[in-house]
Length: 138
Image (cartoon, rainbow, N blue to C red; front, top):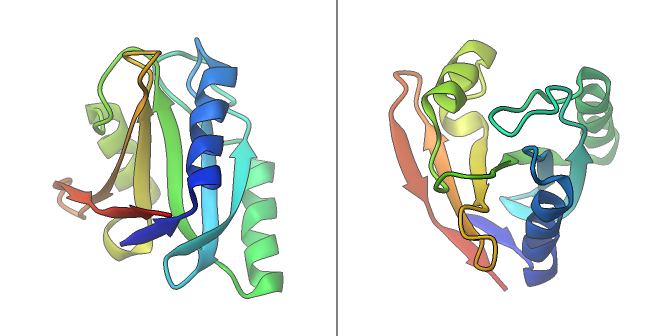
């Protein structure tokens, strides 16, 4: 289960709103599934339908995690017009990248109802199966 503060939870939502109408993306890092830092990553796709994390920024997050004994806990991105559920493209990208199962959680911020964003987290198995994961927001 991911543990995240209300302020960091809200920071993801604000990032989604800032990048709208395009999807936003980012990485949550910390220890023991407790988020201590959010990295807003540039979406190189600049698209309302998909995201591609900037490779240099992704590498910088990995390096920072290595230097500070932190783990990448989750990747997050927004869906600007659909529900907070992984799309077929999201699943395909997870499988192609190898970031599946116990390696990473995927968090979706839906702006389908812009006045009431919905945030949910999922794991994606090596077979492409999607399982909702609990989040503890404090």
